[in-house]
Image (cartoon, rainbow, N blue to C red; front, side, top):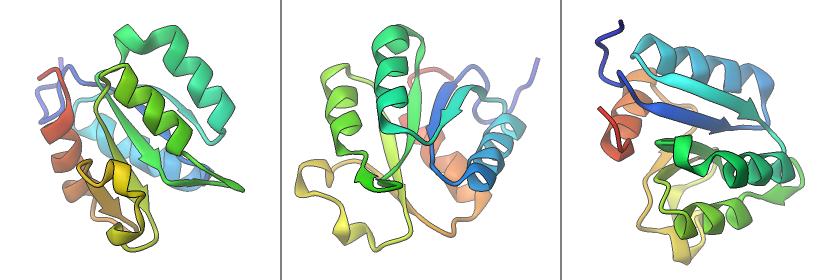
Length: 125
């Protein structure tokens, strides 16, 4: 059993850059998290959250997913009471005002900072 900072935390990663998504997954798993899945597609993420909302403790959510924003998924997560943090290559001030109370991890990020932010929102430790 892994006793890392994220031990027991089940995280879903929504990131359209495959290599970055794999790196995020590795960062989180090295801290003890269980990564439930990775996707870079909004519709796929929305479907997954609808079908597994009771299994998700936290979501790492890229603001921009190819040609669309992830705000519809953020709305869904808020409605389902699933904690999430945004990742973005832009300034945190660019986040839609509705979501300014959610943490933002700006890219490129330091793995330890991402792990700490996920730990802060994860509903299971």
